[in-house]
Amino acid sequence: MRKPIIIGNWKMHKTTDETIDFLKQVDNVCHDLKLEAGIAVPFVNLVVAKQHAHHLIIAAQNCHYEDFGSFTGEISVEMLQTLKITHVIIGHSERREMFNETNETVNLKAKKNLAKGMVPIICCGETLQQYENNETQQIVETQIEKALQGIDFEDAKKIVIAYEPIWAIGTGKTATAEIAQNVCAIIRAKIANLYDEVVANMIRIQYGGSVKPENIQELLAQPDIDGALVGGASLEPKNFLGLVK
Image (tube, rainbow, N blue to C red; front, side, top):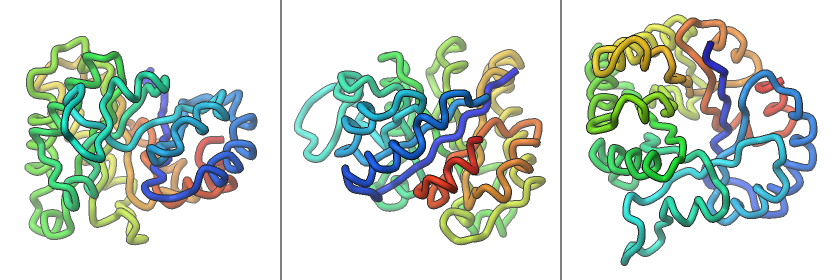
């Protein structure tokens, strides 16, 4: 039985004080959840978030695949480890589109996280044009295959996959539960093809894209959806609790 995991991706939102205020309202209420829940905060808020979160996962939104070096503005996995961060979002569509993230760098980051004992949350998803051209399966299968290249069976079991159709991120458009389930089933079948049914049935697959309290239950009721990567709806305490409680 796969334990659901819901992560709020705050992107570039909230100051340090706002982060503390959010966690004061939310963290204690989350002490008896039946799922794993957390927030991916901006780098500058990781320290205070860890200090004030006792029941929630605090995740990073990105990392570099090198241990150290001349990479201005970047953060290494080892640096995240010193803060006791355990989960890292990798390959979000905004990173791919705006910051030249590629399938190859996603793979390098995934390997580095796994080597350090971290949990990579690997994002995949298609654009509106690709969706309308019926290329969804081809796109996500390619992204998954390249992201997992060279990762062994045992490490693969630890990975979380987040399917986020780009056309549904921040647009108010939501893939129906049926569409989301179909693509997550495609992803799981691809993982089974790359590894085996055991690995495929252990990997948790999140859905992301205009997820909110009103549709979370229908999404989680799908057999191949094991959680959500949530954007805007995770920023307000009431909405976040509506997602995870």
